[in-house]
Length: 364
Image (cartoon, rainbow, N blue to C red; front, side, top):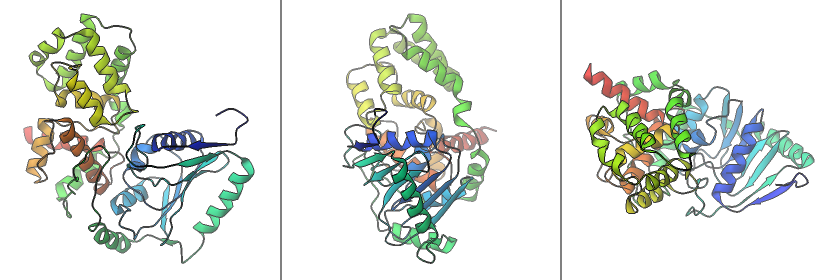
């Protein structure tokens, strides 16, 4: 957008997501009047630390009540409900607003150019219009009893309605299995233990190492060995990466860039192309998912032996949810988002911290 522009048309989910993210980086507060809310709020606003006021249509089955609860539990967040609300307004007072068709959900805000769901919006930066929107939101927020507080009973009723709604994600053609209605106490306890772990800080070293490698014009044998060393530092199996070290370094660099820097494309498509072109020959999806996690710990929980044990022990394993193919990993991501919301975790990446804490407890 040029300095003289006060509006910009946003023709797809990726552009809408980018605009909302841009507002959040400058905002001192956010006001959201969005019909349907899903777990996507966590990754969209993961770096925003200011206050949030949100209004949603809680009783509609397209709203995920667990995602609403997790947003309510976020420090500085206040969420209300309003039946019949069908607006999609993302307002940063004094900064700008995005107004359009996109709900706060993964399908509507997919970060891929060719997202299957068609959405459009307008980014508004005109100060007078922003001030009018702020007044409109304030009147909506204070319109009691039409706009009301959300109680535990409201959330429980919404969960019953939600059961009637088929859950699908843009990165998998298969329906994503829902988490159990009642989660075991030990899992809730682990979620409470890991909730405040700063993932970006925890994996900063690995992320910086990866970014340093993919920014190079070419990789040396030492560089490829460094990737193997990083992986082996976690998997404890250095020998399994010998074929990876012998593969084409040109293809390895292309594969790493596609994996960790290709977020304009769906993850299932990226993994599929990497496998078909043999760009990361010698690495299987468990290792690739670990690299993904380090590059975006808020968005890509890995799938490995720990994950498999966790799912089996908690009786949440499901056919087609594994690391055996790009589609199976995508299905795991969809399930992890739902589980993270049900556990009221700040990001889907924290699901891996629950998995790891559980697995490490078994070894002790």
